[in-house]
Amino acid sequence: MAKLNADGEEGVSLFPMFNILACTLGVMVFVLATVASVSLGADKAVEYAGPEFEDEMQGRVPTWMEWDGRTLTALPEGTQVTFERDLRDILTFDATYTYLFDQIVGTPMGAEIAAISGDPDRYLMLLVRPSGFRTMPELRGYMELLGIDVVPEPIPQDLRRIQVQ
Amino acid sequence: MYRKPRHSGGADILDLDSLMDILSCLVGVMLFLVIYTVLELGSVTYEASIPVVRQAPPGSERVVVVADQGRVRVLDARGPLEQLTSGFEIVRYEEVPAFVADVNARAPADWHFFYSLVFDNRISAFGNPIGAIDLLVEERPGVVGDSIHQLDANSRFAASLGALDPQEVWLSFAVDTESVEVFRVAREFASARGFATRWDPVSVDFPVTHILAEGGAEILLTPRSTLTKPDR
Image (tube, rainbow over all chains, first blue to last red; front, side, top):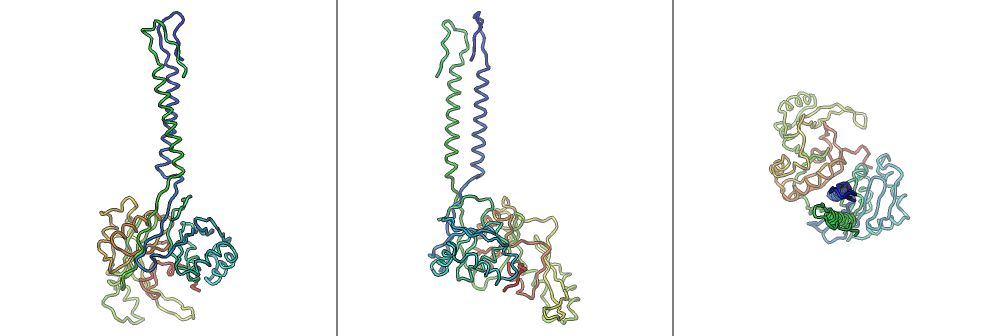
């Protein structure tokens, strides 16, 4: 706090004001960092809506899934199935589909896929991260083998929160 | 708030109390802004649009758009291929090397690529020698595609699309892992101009050698032509 000399000599100490200014500056830097992170989109959620079609697909209901090369996730429920093997490393498509079937059947994901397969009014909206690009043909081929129409859509690798309509 | 007792006869004293009040108030407002922003951050949502999915017009041809390393380039091999093969109906097997050398002198090219034919003697799956003519696509040195910031009405991509008719061609994007964002912008750009689009996850390593005998240019840079795994 500013203090006057005992003998009444007039004087002003600016030390407290510097403290306050330093504090203010710190808060402003914090505000700046926060606003910057918001503007850069850190931790943003991205909401995807099903595309419009110009043919008979319009009116059909999308079922959303996400593929990252290892894990297939149903959205928004979050049901997952993870494949330990690299699908590209399996030598033939027949063996790949057999492996996929063995991993999926009997799981909640298997039930979901069976439901889409048996419903002509549904299709699969597959959100694919770049890590899943290599093996997308295998997964897509499997779904199409089950009679499921697949509409793939690439999404950024670092997207953490996905919402679907 | 604590206030220092005012000096009784302090006509000449510089009093900083008011300044402190103002600064405290400012700090409080800024803290409120920070807390509000942080709370808002948790609910920020961006909507990602997926363009209208158009069916390719009947009889339309496929044109590849390479989206790799964060840039897009139109790879329309139809014209160069026509240029390379026009004027010839039937070429005898022993004349093929000379034919290839002849037509490569035509050196067709576009903004981004050089096109030529390559003759190759191969052994078939049954052990028989066969001759094959491949299409070789090479990058023009130093000529890169349009980045996401360059995709506007004055870009090469826009000019390339301007030379195409949406009723005669549809666009097949070959997208690598680094080009999701630029692909989305380029697709929206093309879709707004009436083009039907598809995309495939394809990593392209130039120069590209494409076997014309297995489907022609129609399967250039598709998973079918780039997968090493047997079909079945």
